[in-house]
Image 1 (cartoon, rainbow, N blue to C red):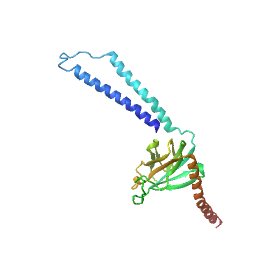
Image 2: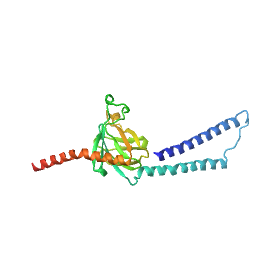
Image 3: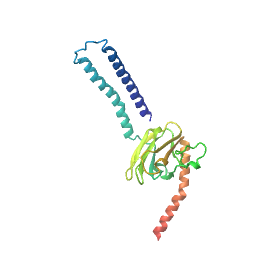
Image 4: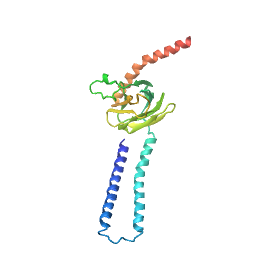
Length: 236
């Protein structure tokens, strides 16, 4: 997101400079070559120097824009070496998450209804569980869907990627500040499209380790129960 913001600021400066320059030319031409000051129209048909300038200058501007643009595209497309992998699966209408690098535990994340919100929780964005990641860690996010098209998007991270059934897309982010970050499904996925938010908690590495241990302990009985059920079916 820092890189996207820098590119935006560069483009904004170029746009403002070009706009002011063109506006200045228009005002000068309207003043200098008005009928009162120029009663006899000039017969000039071309000017080699001006034509070279208005050809070369835009090319230079495009090159200046192209370099950081290609850099940004590369950063978006190439996943750096990740410290953590999280898998996000879109459902109608909630998200489920898996942590394959940390015991492969999983959980669902549902929006908290308006009438159940507690003080401090944000309407339409608060969820009963959250994606938890350590600060200053490169997080690779694998994204897919179980039913229809969804999109996993967190604006603060500059991340937005489609969740497609039967396909695994990937993106990444690196949060440099602890805190809570929100996102939403950004692909029209049905009647409750606007009710499947994303909540990401960025915590210290020690808190993340403690959270992972807690999740693994909580899921262990459930995994044991599933294994026992499969064993019973096999013996039958």
